[in-house]
Amino acid sequence: MKRELFDTEHDMFRKSFRTFLEREVVPHRKEWEEAGIVPRDIWLKAGKNGFLVPWVDEQYGGTGVKDFRFDQIICEEMARVNEAGFFIPLQNSLIAPYINEFGSEEQKTRILPKCVTGETILAVAMTEPGTGSDLAGMKTTAVDKGDHFILNGSKTFISNGLLADVILVAARTDPKNPHAMGMFIVERDQEGFERGRNLDKMGMKSQDTAELFFNHVIIPKANVLGNPTQGFMYLMKMLAQERLTLACGAVGGAQAAYDLTKSYIKERKAFGKPICKFQNTRFKMAEMKTEIDMAQVFVDRCVMDHNHGKLAGDIACQAKLYTSELACRVADECVQLHGGYGYMMEYPIASMYLNVRIHRIFAGTSEIMKEVIARADGL
Ligand SMILES: Cc1cc2nc3c(=O)[nH]c(=O)nc-3n(C[C@H](O)[C@H](O)[C@H](O)COP(=O)(O)OP(=O)(O)OC[C@H]3O[C@@H](n4cnc5c(N)ncnc54)[C@H](O)[C@@H]3O)c2cc1C
Image 1 (cartoon, helix red, strand yellow):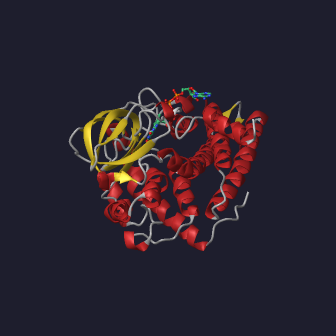
Image 2 (cartoon, rainbow, N blue to C red):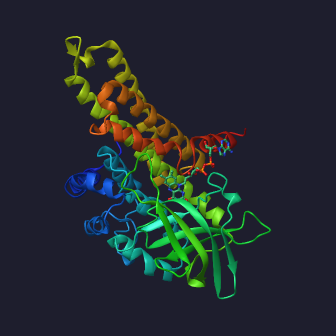
Image 3 (tube, protein in one colour):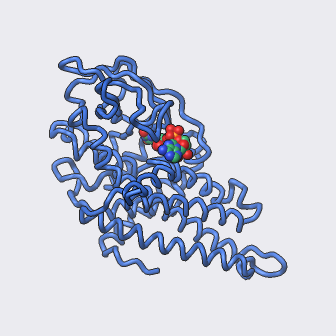
């Protein structure tokens, strides 16, 4: 289905980002997956080409153009080439927005320009070994000592956990009130801050996902993001964009798996004819195409609503829920249509299948999405 939301400037941006991925990222995929991490150099290259947080205001090194369609294009193009390790959307659309929205002028001036150049890589640390969905159960604490806070606790599953130079760490700030939470800026090599192992995941092989430990880390007041009791409110405000970002990637992932499979089924023969000539294959492809197109229309509408400041949190949850489940269903069906080759890692559909599985889990599981949607509907 022809999409209506992009203009010439978006098409140009897509073309140049696609070329960048094909030249600088795709050829190195295997090497990075084996290393379990991407080199810092690729962040610098992305920055040099204008692909990191381009939306920040000019005084911080960006263009100041706040149009989520550019973020959407990045997600789609990364999904198109099945790049799940070099996590640009995390920097651009999930973490830098916190600093831009709630940071002081001094913090923005200090941190954002280097996020644009790629000298600073960001991470956000909320999940803990004992709690993910239920963030009110968080154990990490930040105690106010007058001119600084003392941070203690541990986090897990943190994307960019090894590479990150600046980490936004969520911590409880009032032992009597589980809803008092703050976000604290922890910088590389601060005393008491340690990184654990690079976690061995089923997919996203070149993404450094790690455990982080904070043992009496001194957080100067200059590194407190906004009001240290309003972290949950900040989360609520930013979650719609986070979920929309992941929905853009999920529907892009479904489309990529579909396209790959469409080529395969025309080539592969069984019983003397290409497998695309079997009714089951054509019906499965038709069902997937229909669902992907319908999901894309919904996501595109969410993107435009978001551009106009009108995207409701529960609608973003609907987008994330539907596209995450769809991406997993489509990837599974596409593996099936590849037969035994679909199970072989040398066929890209196998790693697509493994990469999309995370969508139903991170940034709020599908079950949590359903809770939010039902609650918003008065149930
Ligand atoms: C690859 C990867 C990258 C990640 N990156 C980051 C990151 O950068 N920063 C970060 O902070 N976190 C990150 N996470 C953590 C991720 O957001 C959490 O894993 C996720 O929110 C789920 O939390 P959990 O793992 O503790 O699962 P749990 O909360 O223990 O959930 C387990 C199961 O119980 C279900 N469940 C829980 N509560 C309910 C409920 N009320 N109703 C119904 N079912 C429920 C869940 O849906 C799930 O099926 C990442 C995780 C992964 C795997």
